[in-house]
Figure 1 (cartoon, rainbow, N blue to C red):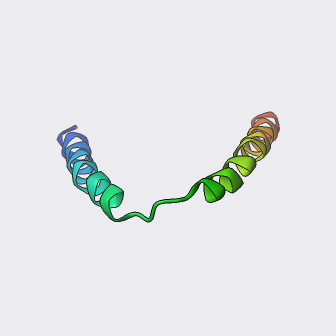
Figure 2 (figure 1 turned 60 degrees about the vertical axis):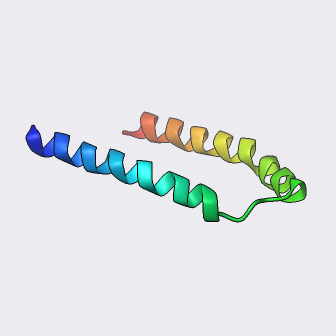
Figure 3 (figure 1 turned 90 degrees about the vertical axis):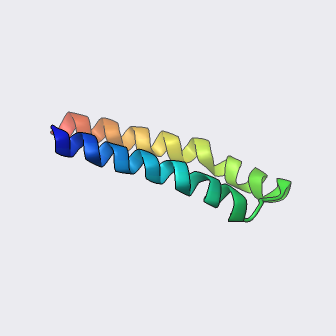
Length: 59
């Protein structure tokens, strides 16, 4: 149990450090790039749900 708590503590501290660094140095996407990405989000979510449904029924 102590191993689990120490692992969770290390992950939490790493996230506290990593997230601000990523936000500071990540390249900013413009509106055109965001529009291209948002066009693909819903179809990919739908496909992943269909695959999850098949996986559930087959196992």
